Length: 257
Ligand SMILES: Cc1cc2nc3c(=O)[nH]c(=O)nc-3n(C[C@H](O)[C@H](O)[C@H](O)COP(=O)(O)OP(=O)(O)OC[C@H]3O[C@@H](n4cnc5c(N)ncnc54)[C@H](O)[C@@H]3O)c2cc1C
Image (cartoon, rainbow, N blue to C red; front, top):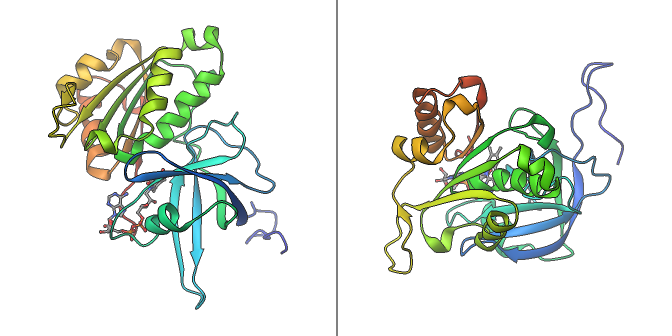
């Protein structure tokens, strides 16, 4: 297969589709799986970036979706954590059908706006809803690689809203990051009815952001990701609380098309 040529001579070449090989599949929650991919000639990525995934049926029908990269740039392989939507076209294939050794077309990394490196500094205020936590975990995993001195210069807080305890993505790794890399984590569950959960319940609201987020005077770098209504509500509240709009970056995981 030849490399794609620029649409405009001298212009940037479109991103190439590459056939990745699934190295591993593991559960990330009751509804989500993490795929570790070996991508040939992978150029490296920044925490927060995503890839496009393309499925092609035998009759030529194609479906394409975006998935955040869950792994840190320092990790080997490119990990995607996909939450299964029961009536979805693409996510059930990725979570239920793909097996180690299978091929998967991907292109990327994509996106420079919703990306963060330790050198960009902090404090870091991460607010995720549902699978929107995935790129935020990539940022925390990247920060974990940076060493204690760099981490001390960039304190980090994660506010994570999930429906239920079993829907929490990578719960054990979040607890590891919290304990080993000094991340303040606030988990709030919107639909948990079980008695096992004694922590916070309900949606992310202004009171929670004021209490658990950094004050605007600390000028945190805020990254907000999740379903479109969640992102719009949280970003609006952060600005109303006094955070500068240019410090509030958002990524929406809304339905496609
Ligand atoms: C930049 C970016 C990064 C993303 N990263 C991730 C990721 O890391 N992990 C992940 O699981 N998903 C991620 N998504 C969402 C992903 O691209 C798909 O939208 C999702 O997997 C659903 O695809 P599907 O084909 O299974 O469902 P579809 O066939 O597209 O839709 C099925 C049904 O679900 C609804 N729906 C579609 N998408 C969503 C959604 N995101 N939330 C709620 N309802 C929806 C549709 O309206 C429809 O009713 C990301 C999206 C973007 C834009």
